[in-house]
Length: 365
Ligand SMILES: Cc1ncc(COP(=O)(O)O)c(C=O)c1O
Image (cartoon, rainbow, N blue to C red; front, side, top):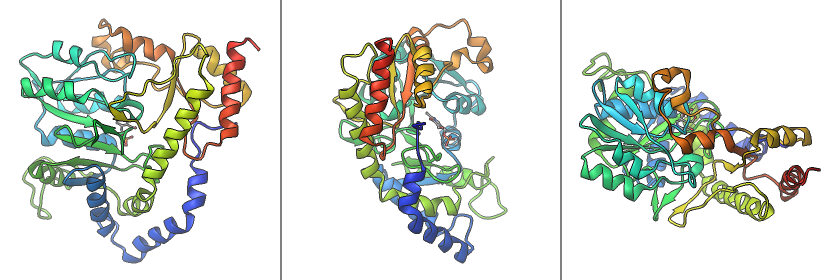
């Protein structure tokens, strides 16, 4: 079976370096907020062209703590996309604010800025654009709407570390950027981990306090906080892996562009790559009305695929009160998208086999 993601090859190549980093933390016994965390925060912030990085327990917590630091809460509305991972929506709900979903553009699967503007009410406090599959949302238009209506912008960069929009790194454009280091991400830990990046020192400090039980000094608590620190062991592993991120993102782009060539002429929509950005292809996602049959056919041929995401958030049982709302592009995408295997080590031979299998499906072989 050709897997959708193979982490074994990456681990095999970095085994000694990673074991050395883990051993260093074990020897130091500084398991919580040890020096590796600070080092990673500085390096990831610089990589994202931001002044500050605050390591937290997951990408979900990066969103949750950002919303808390920006004082988003009951009575507020937060506009976001329904075509995303559940954490984008449920963190808004956890804050006490109401998630307001608006439709996406079918070409990029990212927020439609015109739909964002149309959904603004006096209660709107923030916008959460998601850079889905590793490609930037239309940040100029989104920031323009935000500035005109004095709204906060929280970039969900969980899938897009290293991606750019008009030369700028994602995460550096809005008020905060939220990163996930979930193992399958372009920069993946060996467990849960995340980070908030920002250029705002006050926000960075607030998030630092929030992640450690709401107090700067041990056992003194100024605000209602959380226990959400990035684990030192994970930070040490990520410090090793960060050295390879640029090379891996380039590798993903090579794989994606090769797929574009191999799949050209087939009746499936290949990913649109905006000339305004640098797409890091967390996923390579095609679209076809025959998605379910294609996926089953590929499975029989020995090719794994995934559907990100089969149910848009407004159609989730969690958001049953929104079931009547209608976002045609998000709904169509949920019915038709199919993500193919992508990772930097994917061989040309395997890609040719995958493309040949897809051709076989459409040829009725
Ligand atoms: C778009 C998006 N937002 C948020 C998250 C949450 O990140 P995590 O799994 O690290 O909590 C993820 C990843 O899983 C994601 O893909």
